[in-house]
Length: 366
Picture 1: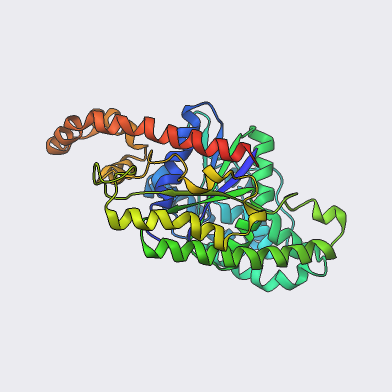
Picture 2: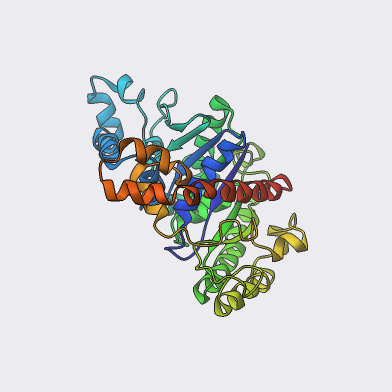
């Protein structure tokens, strides 16, 4: 099992949409996958389930997010609470409050056969604050501090042990704050969804600079704690898997990626930016060819126009929209539009599977 994160120091690049479709593509080619939403905006969660269902999950958790120990003591049906799907913050809350974890794991949300979701929650910033409070304790080997830093990885491993996942895909916010420092530094690999613009170049620069600082901090911690506590962290510091261009406007025939010249010029600068700002020890498994090329080449490079919005409306990947919409949608104009573009919707499946296979090649080299 590998834990992989999507990360960019820039919002609005379609990261959650890509994570959602990557999960379905991995499922389509036979890999059991878990999606974990650690972006406070919860866009990945909203892709997977409707807002009313998410509201019910959050509402039942509210007392526990306020004070887990008191809510657990006062609850008359705690066993029922943990027998229903819960958010990632609910699972982290005992650690946040410094109390013992509850026994067992709540069920996950099943999006499809071999594809599950651990939903996000807007309140995850509270856990981030607790990481910041306890960070210095990690240098002294404080048990609670170590537990706080490693519990996201621990939860992923527990679910994988229970459900035999091949991949766990973690969505993150665009922040370079301490929550993402903890997430990115304790997963196995990450890749950067980017747009062909100046902001993505600077995003990669910022990620590379931050990654160097984070690695130094973790190396110091590793040198100060016991061998047994070191086992809670990944054996190897996180590896960079590459980048992909996502949601770019196509211009046919201008270059090998069918991008405008201005966008193409930015894309050609990305490999040099990676070489300059991401340390070789964090990308040592990448060949020169992998370093230079986007993951999946142009498979998911170009915009799907309004298709992602339709995907979110029906909580299903783009290629499943016609099947669901044409059997449930009452709006005749919308039905007609979807029916008329059916082949275009279906064609996206092949593109995302191509992207997933390319990413797997890089993960396999870890």
